[in-house]
Each structure stands twice: as structure tokens, then as C-alpha cells.
Image (cartoon, rainbow, N blue to C red; front, top):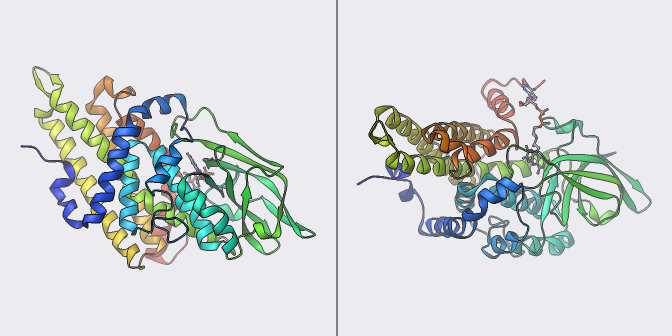
Length: 387
Ligand SMILES: Cc1cc2nc3c(=O)[nH]c(=O)nc-3n(C[C@H](O)[C@H](O)[C@H](O)COP(=O)(O)OP(=O)(O)OC[C@H]3O[C@@H](n4cnc5c(N)ncnc54)[C@H](O)[C@@H]3O)c2cc1C
């Protein structure tokens, strides 16, 4: 009788019935409806927009937000959904994270009632897609330097600038765009059919291929005064949205790690080397045991952070701890699992290398590992070493 890696930590006992139900539902959706097509989407570098309706129908978009057609679950349930999506592919989890935690959260938290009524129900159902434009070609880790500018022209705003690496950019119906104004950084809700708005898909990616990544060009985009997010003042607003998405990654990355580990354990059980199963060798068992420890510790950390978030007690530095640790360990696990698969491990038939490649992006976006190290360093010492 064998055990699953997370059973060694008794993780299920830490979850409520509802949390376990949500997790099982998302796992079923991924395994039955999405997983069979993931290698093909990864190879062709696409993610079909049509899956949005199915994900929306299950309440996965903005699922931790209240009202406006959102499911209103707790943070742990949202995290578990992210984990199961990312057990399929980080591109799937990114699709849902950007829609719920960046696009919808920015409107839900900082928007006018009119903006919320106009966009949130459609975004929640998957009828519309959103994206979030903060990063620019020359400003990623330091978004304070952004060059995108919004200026007043009579009753209107005019936006000019370029955003880069924007997930779902070419698929989106609405973009939350951050720009410098005379009044500091402000956010704007930009319907993507506004004249002067163009989204160009980034090609040639070696990571996060089952996800659409785009450049957004804003060339004299004219918007009514009502397009500004009234409650978002300064860089703290977009950074708070990133915190929401980062929380999903704390759980999500572990999905990629768990799927890699389960794949490697199954493979090692059937692959014979030197006349007996690879799983029977001590070197293999050491790898599997070490990876299981990191996966389980990461899961305990994620659940602890989730419970803190549900109590309203979590700080950005604490989310940095989870994002840094769990993504770093997940990529190490995915790479180690690939070694167990030998040459078969470099094909799309098995998930670990696809996960490892995707996790390169996850290490970089929502704050690079270096930024999170610096945040934790600042929390510990009181000295900011960013510049
Ligand atoms: C697939 C993908 C999807 C993305 N989706 C979105 C999206 O939807 N919306 C969005 O706005 N952005 C998105 N991004 C952009 C992402 O957030 C940025 O790439 C990230 O913030 C890093 O910025 P950069 O790439 O410009 O790297 P840089 O900021 O140029 O950093 C380069 C390297 O320098 C290091 N570094 C920077 N500053 C310091 C320092 N002070 N000390 C030491 N090291 C430092 C970094 O850690 C990194 O290793 C996405 C990126 C990817 C890859």
C-alpha cells in the first residue's frame, strides 16, 4: 500500500468539507476537460478563449470576491483552485489569476459602482476577459519609473504609452492600465476596442506557452473621465492587486510540483533499469523523499498563509515568504522529476519539464525572487536594499 506525497502530511484534515469539495471539482475539471489538450496548447503556443465560459460557469473567476456574480469563497478555497489549475498548467492558473485577482480585483477594490456593474458580472461569468497592464518594456521590477502617461484634454483623458508582458492582453475585452498623471499613478478601465489601443501577441516564448502574453500600445487613447478608477491613488493600488495574485501563486506553484512528483513516482514504478523498477533504487527514493518534504512544507505554509488571509491578518511580506519559497521549491521539484523520467522527460508526453519551463515565468512575474528576497530582508533589518 503506497501513499500520496501530501497524505504523509495529513493535509486533507486541515481543510473543511467545502474546501475539499471545491478542490475536487477543479481537479476533475482539469483532469477530464483540460489536461488532454494542454500539451497541444503548449506546443502551439495558445490558450483558447473559449475555455473562459467553462471556468466562469464553475465560479472560478474572482471566486474570492463578494457580490457582482462572484462566488465569494474564502482565500484557502481560492488557493486550492489555483493549485489544481496549475497542476494542469501554469498558463491555466495565470488565465484565472489575471482575470480574478488583477483585472476583477482592481475594479472591485478601486472602481466606481458604475464600473463594477458594467464589468464584474461579465468578467465573473467569462463572457468578457480582462487584463492588467503595469509592466513596461523598461520598467518591470521598478514600476515607479513607468512612462505611460494620462493627461486631461477637456472632459477626457488621453493615454499614451506601451505596456509589456501582459497576460491575456490580446484576448481581453477590458484592460486595467496604470499611468502617470499630474496627480501620481492612477488606474484606468480601458475597453480594448477603444481607438488607439492595440495588443500585439508575444511569440517565441520558451515558458508559459499555453498562455497569451502581449504588448499593449496606447496611442492617444481617449477615455471619458469616468474611466479612471476613483479609489486607486498611487503605486500602492496596483501593488495591492499584485499581492492578491501572488497569494494564488503560493498555492498554484505547488500544483505544478505535485503533478510533477506524482508523474515521476508513477514513472519510476514502471520503468525498469538494470532489471528492476527505478522506484526500488535508493538514489531515486532519496529524490522522491526530499521532494515530498519540500512539497508538504510548502503546502503547510500555503494553508497557514491562507488562514491568515481569511482572518484579515496577512501582510505583503508574509505573502513574499510564501511566493518566494513555494515557487523556488516547485521549480526545483519539477526539474528533479524530469531527471527521473530520463529522455522521456524532455517530451510533451510528460508534464515535469513543461511545468519547470512555466515556473521560470512564475519565478519572474508578480515580483521576481530577488524582489521578494529584498522585501524579506527589509522586514528583517529595517534597511531597504532595493536601490
Ligand atoms: C509570462 C509573463 C506574464 C506576465 N504577465 C504580466 C501581466 O499580466 N501584467 C504585468 O503588468 N506584467 C506582467 N509580467 C511582467 C512581470 O511582472 C515582469 O517581467 C517582472 O516584474 C520583472 O520585470 P522585468 O522582466 O522587467 O525584469 P527586470 O526588472 O529588468 O529585472 C531583471 C533582473 O534584475 C533583477 N533585479 C531588479 N532589480 C534588482 C535589484 N534592486 N537588486 C537586485 N536584482 C534586481 C530582477 O530580480 C531580475 O532578476 C509578466 C511576465 C511574464 C514573463
